Length: 562
Image (cartoon, rainbow, N blue to C red; front, side):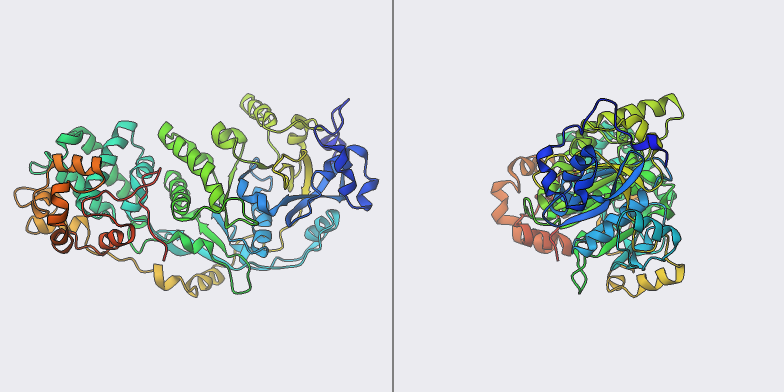
């Protein structure tokens, strides 16, 4: 390592680090240079903490100055950033295995397909041994309890599916690349389906409802509450058709994945590491980034408030985070910001993983208290701008960060976290520890055995296609499909002839028009809304038939935990 990497700025001390904290550092660390000692004092926590590595100072590694992050602060969110090939994936693995050992479940988005090795013990070698010696790490080969998932079963893993109803109109609009007007129209379609008890399980259900609402018999259904223009409906239908033609249909359906599975611990008390393989869908970035947001939003709306807990309930690593924010509407960004801000109180920590901090909107970036910044490249004017922007996001530092960030080696990073009191720690150039699990993918056969032997495999592996909106609308027309809507009864006739005026009244009052609630509710329950899902929903949240499904900030439908 060249000396320039970790040389402090001329004429500076230790930035904002308090010198009074120095006595808390170990006796051996007391021999460190004054500036390094003051940085190390900022990481001398008394409670449980994760070990990241050892301080780098003036070109050397100081193993007595350990850089750590307090366990209770992991739900204050974080950012892992750096150019390709700088070691971000290994950093995720290092943090994940220590969280698991502390009894904290972890979710990892495995975009490149090389995180499955977290389940197997690592392989000792000269490089691992040298790194462990440099940072004073007692390295031993250990794997973590793990579950492996794949979106819709595309790839190696237990299938993760969502129903269209629970996914909701906001996230679906992002996947379909709809503009704000089209997004609002899709929300109206979801509202109509919710109000009428038409379950949107898969893509054909949604297509059937859109087709009905633009047919001769259905086009008047929404006229009194905004309407659905044929042009907008056409765009939505074409987007759905193109989406399905790209092989996306498998991601929507049942059995729907219960995100509560991500909160499990193993019999020995270690947290289960859930690895969602995304390598097979790398060419569908809008889909997988939005599905990750659905997982997080679903957790947010089902988990109880816990405030500041001794340890997180879950730490969620959101890889390739820039894909989530690309081409996002203001409403979508606002929803992300609100979810990230509030999910902390549910005990969930979120780490965004991307190349530069500028990939994350400022309102979200401001909530990420823990920062691990690997090396940045500065080959072009745009790279230079990104470098300067990254430097500005750090607290005052004893380092020349522009020089430091371009000179870090693989497995080195600039770190600042939140202390046990919630204050930022001094900026510390850090040589990171080596993961103790396998740094690479599992053998294909071993991975397949791990998937099929899981207790969850039988629950989610086989897709189910039960009666939902498509079948109901088809049955109401004597077996005709959504493209054959000519005559026959529409859903209003099936449900006692409720029209747009009554929909408006139901929305305004939170349920059925009062004059009809007592009179019609029993017969509607028995004869109209025969679906098990809607009956269960009615029982669990006390809803009345005709009331819209309770939806979250993202428009996702709330579900009770098993």
